[in-house]
Length: 415
Image (cartoon, rainbow, N blue to C red):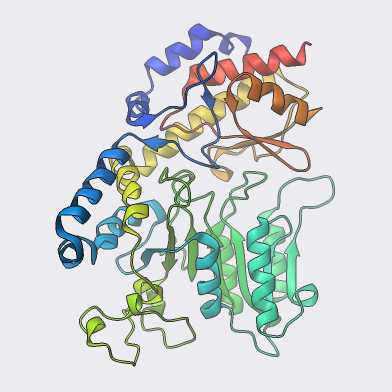
């Protein structure tokens, strides 16, 4: 195993990596005294080099045409991007829209897909779901007059385990089926990096009569998704992590086409009104069929523009090749840690199909280790109470960088 731990071995892997040239499409941060080792794409992806020229072009169009550019260039701007997301999230035409920010979209979706009754008012979430999701769900319950302490069912791992078992999730859904209104989980848990079995979760949620949705912040552009075929009701994701579209980039939503004729509750705005009569200024809302009917306001053109640069890269690479590259890089990091740093505990699932390109590690004196890595130009992150997260992204990380990272950890371990 130690033969893997050499600069030469890592370099050979890079030379035979079919995705190695994709790295040249990104701007890479500069270190103070040595090259930056950027393993934080699960927080903020790197900037595609094409972003700057694309933004300049939109600025030029604004300057040249003013309001006349609206119908010529911007009224359907989002439509040119939506098509690129279909293979990334496994959607069909009409099921995807780009708008707002992630938690805003979760609220908009829950207005529709959390419809509590006296009998059905419970929501199932993860105990360690990202805090913003917990806030959103609790506030939606309170909006309807329900107590989060009694109406939220929180999934948690068994004692002495770090990850949830699919059978426990299924059993919880079945146990609360008659009182369950909605299931909403992260597709990939932000803390552990565990990918949930969304297909089975959606299947059992449908069976008990509950709506099912996912926060795909750490899943979109990272793992295989087939939202339409899995019969997921709704989902939302941010585009600034694996999808490399810049800080605060507009979010994406998915709404299954079975809801395209939706006549239930939703918050309406003019951007969700049919374009054929949008400018008739009628007071009656005439929603677009499908996910676009949930949009409210104009597309933020300058914020959406970087998404095109990212989608062009994903279109070139393809999700299957991304996932293969992710599994290879993450597997190499895992092998080196187990071999060279046996005291480090990896809490991310070992089975490659149960994770994306993230490893979450518990390390003794973890905060000190994190500061040490930062002082050596490593960009990763610390999550309370005891985890360092590393995300080897196949679009821009290399095997040689992984070797250097583990070398730094090994050096610290010997001090």
